Image 1 (tube, rainbow over the protein chains, first blue to last red):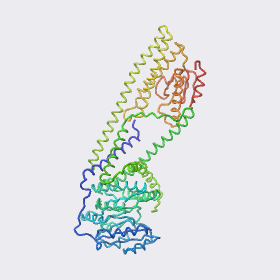
Image 2: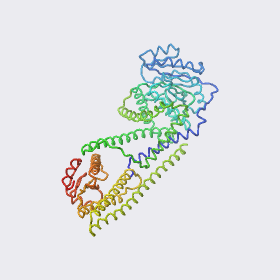
Image 3: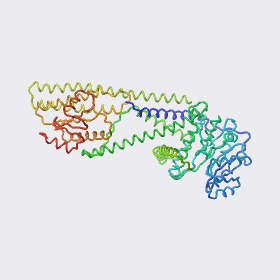
Image 4: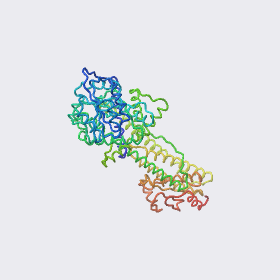
Length: 406
Length: 219
């Protein structure tokens, strides 16, 4: 008979069906709109803020790249905010003849707020010191600000030529994210303005009081505040920006802890919007989507761990008892296929998920790349993705202890 | 778009629930019809023993009756496994408690039948009745019961027709089971009753069981 665990599984199954079907529907209904661009008759002035903490190795290349962008130099201002660096970040910035501000306190949001106060542009770009935008990225992105309701615009973010396995996993992940984000753009539900590169209407930023200096992920927090204030966030799919992923597992793990803590902070701060239609898409989709994702991750992993944990304990006890009665613990496994409702849900969820991944690959132009690529994808699904709920649990524990190191 | 996605998801989900229910029902019906077949087989096998009590027996007749009883036991065991699998896998239909009880009653009748057959025909096989807890809640007990039943099955394969193995749940609500519990003071599981004379409580190794069986004639 049905147990509470069964009902929980059915609820998860329905939610997974819902979100995968939603993304597939959004994709198939909007295929022609993916690469849409808006033309700006008169280009706005643009200030790019680059907060940098000990970025002497990457900053130079980023600044060179920025100077090569096709945005008119007369309408582009670059400001580097040296965020308490102990290396030669300041000197590297000065060498590239850009405006450099120096602050003693650490904190990316603080650095951005100081840069915002000094920026002259109508549009503010926030960029990481190790990001590289494609030549026409800025030109393509600013067009969306024609619509006065647009408060921010984000590009496609990819990882360029990943070499290590971890980098390849992240490359796959970023591919899924950028595709999903464009689909969410079709229902006005872009929920983050990534720090890699995002453009904001300066007036909106000032109206909202700048970035939250207490948040560990000011890029998500500001995005939700922009939505809460009634503005739109758009995603410019054809504008590409490349980022450097963490190359060691430890650095990756710390990054994801920070993202998760920031996400939790944001969700708690905006809990009043959940399922509240007064806040438009923020209340009817974004915050519930986040909350449901959190619940599925935490509960799903907990149930999975409990079921497998039980199975392992049962096997250990069984082996012990087999030895006690004098029979061999090594038995041939008799597989009997008895389909039930779980079989159906398992097969359909697997099939729809595969369709989602295949559609994402086709839409983003990514290729599996032969047997090696297929193996990488399999490892991504079976080893990399299951790390996410474990990281989330770790983040929840840290959140509870109120650790806030970056 | 959100509503469309919800409707499609609801459709896929509902199909799954309906399919799951249909599969459970189908399995349930198979078990019910299987048990009806078993009842028929039992009537036939039971009459064989009655026949031996009424008409003069011969060695061939006795061997025939024993063979038919053992075949019936095999069939009973197969359906027992089916019922157990169904109990584990079915989600939507209520547990087939009455079918399980019919099955257990058939097992008990079979047990009494082979006792009678042994007396009438002078056979020297041993009856080994294994009592377990149906749907044991504790993991330790579940492991013990699984290990014990595996050991008994292996013993059966080694000793062949020298033992007749019967497994009965202690915690099914049947008057005959309550009587057996009282008669043989069965308080824990797993427990084993050999030839209605020797009671072994707790986990028993194959070696120990063989020793006990050797104490009876013919093993």
